[in-house]
Image 1: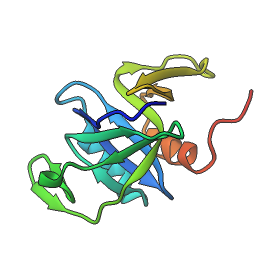
Image 2: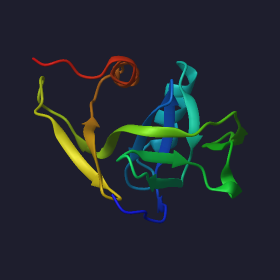
Image 3: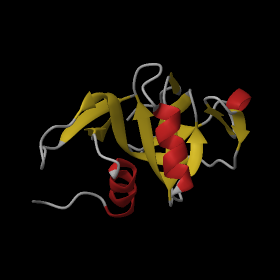
Length: 143
């Protein structure tokens, strides 16, 4: 893969043990809220609102916060919160604009900055944040 400049995405990102989850969706779709819920369950903040996505020569996608917002996340109705943050390699993308309706869905993927990543869709369940954390810890098993 050739060296490419980082891409700034309108997204949020969290990490578990260095495995990054990029959270995408339209403005007001709940990206920061989902990130805060995941953080409350043990994930660490990578970035909120904007994420720098840099493709690496080995085919990974490094997620970092832009300097101006590093360590900050918006909590609507509370304000900007200061949290520890880290850099991560993207392991998956969750798209909050799409809802998954299949019980055992087909695998989906999205390409960001030339890097193919598993794509998950929003699930209407209170367990959705727990599902995402379990995914980051162990990945998806074959049916």
